[in-house]
Length: 591
Image 1 (cartoon, rainbow, N blue to C red):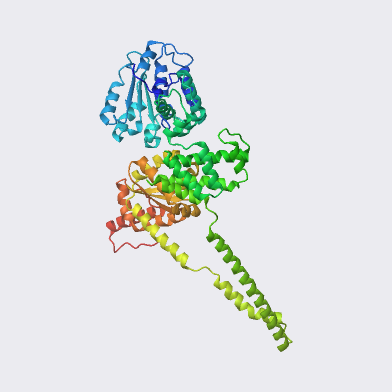
Image 2: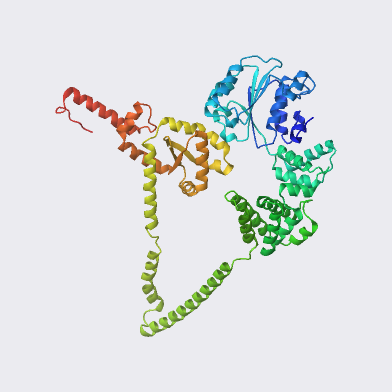
């Protein structure tokens, strides 16, 4: 028999054998036991976390003739056929290669036929986000109201690309990344069953590289077994994955913390020559630094740190650890935008291991020098003031020196206060920016339609679901109030948030890109403060009243006229009608 890859050979066949997704598997089993199975499911999560495996187990359990507490028996004819992939009532579709309207129409035509062998006809559509817009639209009605004998299971790694109309018609299950401990435990079980010896440190390296994916970890394990050495060794894992050895990483971290720039640069270059990648070196440094902080500051135990290393870094300031983690994360982000990985790594090492800059020392010395000079000037002025006071007393004994200096100094104090007034230039700059912002709002209002605004409001909840907690807080103070085909005006409840959001280009780009993905077309956001929106809107209405009325009749206008404007328009119609009946010469209009 041909060799079968480990991730295929050891693919879970029951819910109990699925690793790291207990909450999901328990829910699916209970649904089968209680006979409350929905008509459509959506499995979303990172690659290799068990989405397709759970879909196959669930489909098999639905058609099993001898269920065991919600688990398929794997002994009946239906279970055996499902395991072999030959059961006609379980249809697996790869949306990446079958993403057209015709394929979905074919499904829609066949769902009406009853299952031939089992109780349910189950459609498993993998990578469903790859379907075209036309295919999604063709699937909508069938997905919402399929026949009683049909169950749809959709799987995707990119939930944000699935239309909200599809998500709302399914039960959604979010699969999480599998922990390193669970990955190692599963690999140990498989190697024990295969009777292959292994080094635990090698499995730790594989689990770290796999990044929460069981399929990735088993694929790397398969690659290690291809050495045909009959066992899984730590050094082989380092060579294949490109990870640096733990001892060398500890030495590199120690060089960075002790400010040995040259030694750190030489060691990093040797690691790169040995096959390690800049990404792996930085990732290991972050992981090692985090564990070191937990051991030293939180009293936790770690089998990853050697005793000598712990002793050497115990006196290091905790700020140095946090600064190193921050710098390493920044370097990892920089790697995404460059092909020269060594340059980004070298910059990180120099930045982290250098001594406090001479520029800062120079500035400190300069500041101290300035303070000394000011102290000397103050002393001289005090002496001059005392001499002047003595002269005044000698010349005008009837007037105290305190009174004279109060009178003479008053204008100076007043002048100084006047000079401290802020210059009008920033006010002027703000006025110009407001004028430009008003023009941008006008450009949207001239083409605004109710349909475009309703489309944005429909996807607003979906936008909240893909953003982080701090970013979702922003959506609470933003409200779309007018939209055209390519732009949208959003009013901001608070002026402080308006200024902060307008200046945060990364946040605006994230908001724009996600909104564009849901709407399936490019979109530009124009921000306006809440108070300014009312005045800009009223001014625009007064200038374009006739055009807005015409568009309202065509049911296109988004902006409604104010009540006062509507009353004026109604009064105008009455006057025009009166003039038509009685003549303009007879009519006398009074307010």
